[in-house]
Length: 108
Length: 118
Image (tube, rainbow over all chains, first blue to last red; front, side):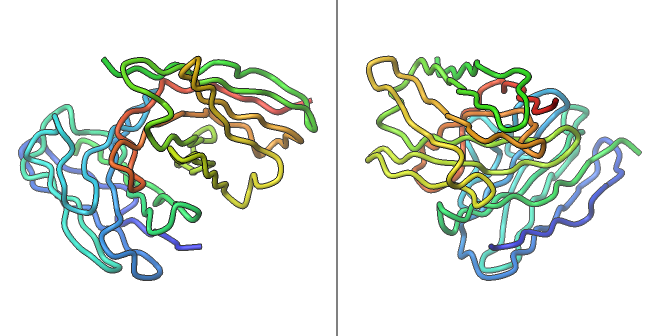
């Protein structure tokens, strides 16, 4: 299986900060990577797909980059609604889809 | 408006069976890749299974041979038949749509809780 490792596990930041979350794959996954936001008790919400494509309706302060084994999710200016847990997901093969362990973004 | 509504969760004993349903509206299930993803209490997300628009199915190793994904086109509904349930299958189960056809899920249901315990 392809292992996905997110860092950091927890991130403390303030409104207005620029934050970056990293996701590393144990082998190359080309650009087959998505990012999700999840709030407590809610379903995940797709933010970015194919590593850098912004899902429709998602604010432009969210962006994704990377290919191969290293990827980043950047939030350019944190808003109060952005404090949540973020997951990366690789889908290099549909029989081997895996998620990262999650990054909890909390208010400093 | 796209909606996914799961049902069928509940408490079941180890070794038992349960069938989850995911009723879709606003789009056609059979024209999309549809997945089940689960989340154990306090844990991260785990992909469970997918059914392609063409009917091919895939499963995570942890559920292979025990779970079966299917759909009823006339009811526009996705199913997950779960047999030989174990305590480690306890989780909220989400159904999700992959309209991009590559693996990412753009719409999710609200989830249904499955608890496996004696």
